[in-house]
Image (cartoon, rainbow, N blue to C red):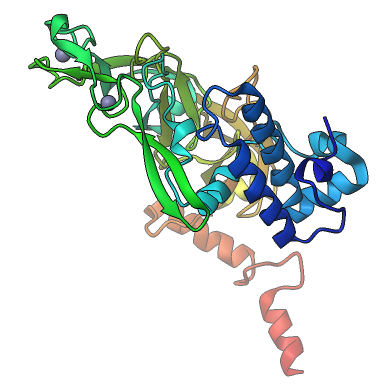
Length: 372
Ligand SMILES: [Zn+2]
Ligand SMILES: [Zn+2]
C-alpha cells in the first residue's frame, strides 16, 4: 500500500485541519454514490478513508509515523483498523447524515443471523452446588408458520417496490456547503426489502415472523455462581432469510444460603461448639454440600478459630475437583442450662478460684496491677 500522506496528498507535518480538508476533497471525488459502478473509484475511496482514519487519530498517527502500517496492525485489532469503523461518524459529520446508511442497510434481503435471547435465571445454592435440570420459558421469534416467512400466502401479490425499483434504497439529492450531494437512504415504502406485498399474511401482518412461546430444558452444571452465563447455541431467535439462529444466553443468579458463604470455589461455615469441647477437644458434626462429616475440635480451641478441610468446597465449574471448606468454630454460650450443668459449672467456678482464667495472668490480677 502507498504511503498514507501520499494518498491524501499532504506533507508529513500536516495538521488536523489540513488532513480533514484533504480527506473531504478526495472522499467527495471518489465517493461510490457519485461514481456508481466505478470500481477504481471505490478502491480509491477505501484507500483515502483508511489513510484518513489513521492520520486523524493522534495515537494511531504517531504509531504509523514510527513503525508504519505493521506497527498499527500489532497495536490494533482488525476491527480498529478496518478502514470502516468509527469513520462513519466522521463521514456523517462531513456529509451531513444519510450517507452511512449505504453500508449499514445494504443486503437487507440476504441471510441474517437471528438475535440472541437473554434470560435471567435464579437458582438455589444447592442447585448451584449439585447441578440441576431446569425448564425456562422464552419468547422466541420464528418464521411465521402460516406464510413460512414469505410475508404473504399469495406470492403473486408480491411485486417490486416502484419507489426504489427493488433496490431497497433511494438517492436523495441535497444541497450542502460541499455542493450538491447525493445521499443514499433506506426506501421508506418497502423498508429496504425492495418488495411490496399487496395481500400481507394475516397472522404476521406481513412481517414473516411470529413470536413463539417455548419451554426449554436447561442443564445447570454444578459449580455455577452468580454471573455465570450458560449459552445454548441456536436457541435464540430464528435466522432471517435462511440465516443461522441466534443463541440463548442464560444469566445465572444464585440465592444466598443460610448455612454456607461462598467465595469463588471456597465455602465458609460457622459451627457452634460447647465451652467444654473447646477446652478438652473432641469431635463435632460439620455440614458439607453433600453430607454431614465428623471433624476434630483441637484441644484449647478459641472462638473464631478456623480449620480448613481440603476439597470439600464448591465444585469447580471447569475441570474436576472442588475448592476447600473453611470451618469457623464458635463457642456457644447457652442462655439456659440444666440443673446438673449448673452444679458442674459452679464447681468449676470454685475450682477456678472464682476467676475466669487461672493459668495465665487473669483479668482480676491485671486490674490489681492497674491499681497498684
Ligand atoms: Zn405470516
Ligand atoms: Zn422500496
